[in-house]
Image 1 (tube, rainbow, N blue to C red):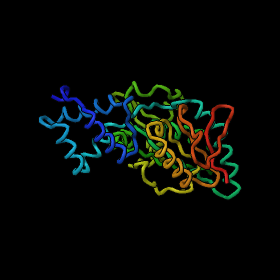
Image 2: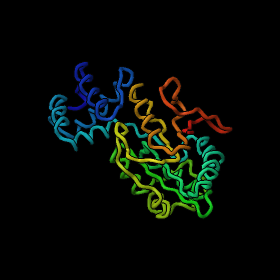
Image 3: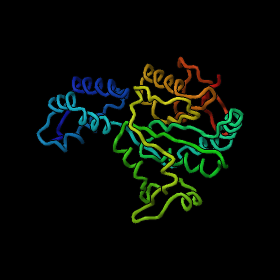
Image 4: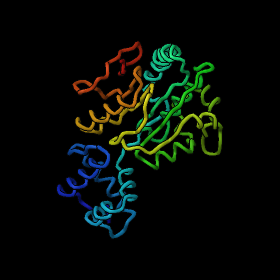
Length: 273
């Protein structure tokens, strides 16, 4: 039985090293129970499989490895999570970008929601921008995650009644259709977002981004991986651009070129060259 499986120190080291190599998530003794719990969940669906035999499987089967990595990622999210970030986006960042980009003759704002989970963050951004941007302004959002299951939820754009908390009533009426069991994001908003699988260990290939959201993701990485990921963000961004990270995350002491930015609503970082 999966519940009877005990993760020995040797097993923990082996699985932990594999997860770190594949996606940069750093399991320690503090969060060891999460890895053990997720392993038990996987093995519960595979009767007769041991920790040793399952490690052998994921070492050879790339699809099962993806499914395992998917299972160990944390996907806590909600619409308009940390409202102060969206207040700063609306009242400081977007006006500043409109001023900068208008001077260069560009009217498109490019955004990356990295570690987007089930889509609440990119849809929140899309609703906000749809509501405040005048013509002829446009925006494009790429939403990425390492969890294929989460990406499918985001692409579908359906959220049950208990998942819509945080959405302002006027946004709910304007940008969602009420359907059986919940709400469906309207096609116009869905068309503004491209959901894409991406491992933050790798270069996304994106360039000239104006805004990057990567909130409550790098906290799961060690210092080396954090710096590598953040510096890749720098490479993907335009010369004047903004980075949002989680309220409990910081670039303090990190070897990075980003500038700390304090606004009336919240703190974030900017690339300003």
